[in-house]
Image (tube, helix red, strand yellow):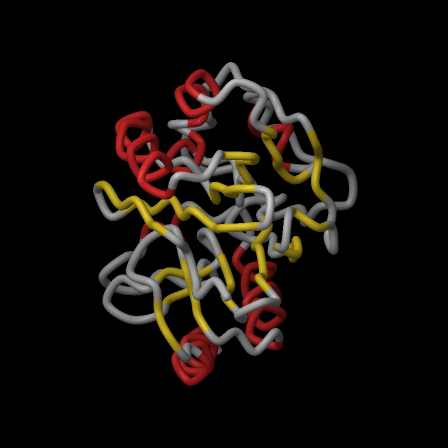
Amino acid sequence: MTQGPIASVRRLAINAHLVADDDGLTLVDTGLALHAGAIRRAIAATGMPLRRVAITHAHPDHVGGLDRVVATHPGVEVLVSRRDAKLLRGDGSPEPGEPEDARIRGSLASVRSRPTRLLDDGDAVGSLQVVASPGHSPGHVSFFDGRDGTLYAGDALATLGGVTTAAKPAWPFPLMALLAWHRPTALTSVRRLRALGPARLAVGHGRTLERPTAALDRAIERVL
């Protein structure tokens, strides 16, 4: 049984994760363009084909390497949430029904690649389940691997200097919350992710954490 990511590529404290599945590999996020070479080498080292790229959210530090990954793996699927596909096109305009105090912060992605499938809550991505976790971005999703309990949480959570959330700035990585689209929504999402009872937490920024439940509880308490 797969135990967490088969490989993780980290550059400038930004992670991309490779997940093994029956038909090959799923790449969760692509980091920046400078991640692309290391991602290519990590894929080659597994001896498995890359089948799909699953994007947690469309911020530049998570999709910056997308064009290079797609160029070196023709035919790979590109999967992103229905809402963040709009950000991937460079469109930061709000959608009807979104919180009035929510807004896009920071720069939008500049990529040519377009999704081959749009994701909704509960969809399957290989063996991963899509879990809607908006807040850091309006269409942020996480991916839960029911085989071993690994939660790929993107920027809903970070583990730099302890577990922190996008719901409240915290040292040493306040940027995740400072750039959040809507912090109250981010807190609701973290509570939902905690309810999954993950055995392992793999994030966009920081190391993969085993048995994260107590740390998640403390992170939620700090927000409250």
